[in-house]
Image (tube, rainbow, N blue to C red; front, side):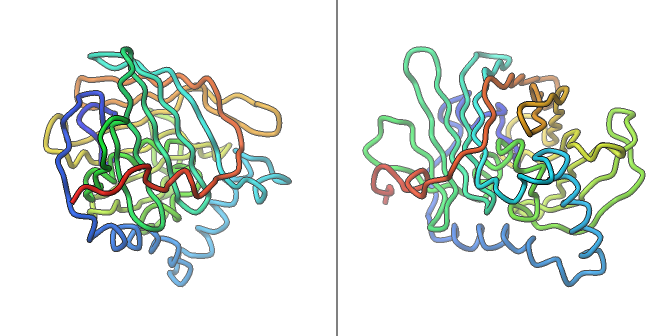
Length: 261
């Protein structure tokens, strides 16, 4: 997430200000650099580990055919509730939506031509800063954990670590601002357990911890029932109501309005 103050970029409307789009391609290119780690000493072992994670979540015979995952969740935060929708492609493209009581909406997207946010009413969209991009990416949830090297700068694997007392291994990565981000996996099943990220927004606790709820089988896939975000004393509960493979359309990341100048 680089984490938003509220677990969600718009649970507290008005947190973000306008930023120039000039740096967005560089930011996305930095995130894509994680895919270049094959030349590092950890490269082959990392390939094997992340392939095991994909097999654990998507099943051996179907992992390569997963183009994107769509998930929907009912979310409860310390101030209000909302509905969340995430559509996330293998290559890192992402669309994140929120809807609140009273008709308020929020949409953010990360695509090859930039990253933006829109409140559903404004005549323009606003480019995301690196901090805001990190916050939106933190809501990638499942695909962030399964395919981190297409979204983050991967550094190395860490063996024999513990996450909530569970034996696990971890992937040490960095977000778009260079802050450490660790993703933890069950030492036996290779299913994601959670991740630890940095809140760059300057409001609220700096460290955020995401914990996946119990995993259950759904058709050929394993899916988490929930994810809980812990930010200081605040908790945000996302209970998933839908998780399924989909085809990602480029139209999902095309801005619906002109960029704000």
